[in-house]
Image (tube, rainbow, N blue to C red):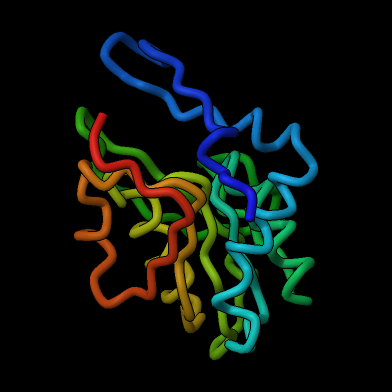
Amino acid sequence: MIDLAQYIRDVRDFPKKGIVFKDITPLLGNPQALAAAVEQLSEPFTSSGVEIVTGIESRGFIFASLVAQRLGAGFVPIRKPGKLPHKTIRESYDLEYGKDTVEIHADAVRAGQKVLMVDDLLATGGTMSAACKLVESLGGRIVGVAFVIELCFLNGRVKLPGRNVHTLLKVASE
C-alpha cells in the first residue's frame, strides 16, 4: 500500500504567518498516489448505496468527483456564495474570526437520496457541518463524511456528532 503521507507537503506561513498548510498537489500529481487516495476514500462506502457524492469548494471537488465515479454515483458541488448559476440554498458557519457561507443548488439532492460528503481536509469542522446541514435540509441521507487529511488537534469531529467520519491521514499536532 502506498504511504500517502509522503505526498503531502507542509508549507509554513501559508496563507498567513503561523499556519502550516497541508499541500496536496504532490499527491494529485502522482497517478498511483491519487488512485490510492480515491480507492481508500471510496472503500468504506462501496456497499452503502451512495447515490450522490458532494465535494466542497475547491479541493474537495477533485476527490469527490473521482469518488463519485468510482462508486457509480452523481457528483454535487458545494460552493462559496455566488458561484452556482441556479437557485441555491445557503448555510453560514463561524470561523475563528468571522463567518463564512456555503451554497448548494436547491434541486441538487432529492429527499431520501444517500449522500457521501467529501473534502480534502477536516480542520475545525465548520465547513463540513454547514455542508451536511444543507444536504439534510434538502432531505438527503448522509451515509458518511470522508477526508484525505484530519488535523486532529483542531477537534473538527466535535462539530460532526453522530457522523460516520472516515479519514486517510491523521495529523496529531502542528
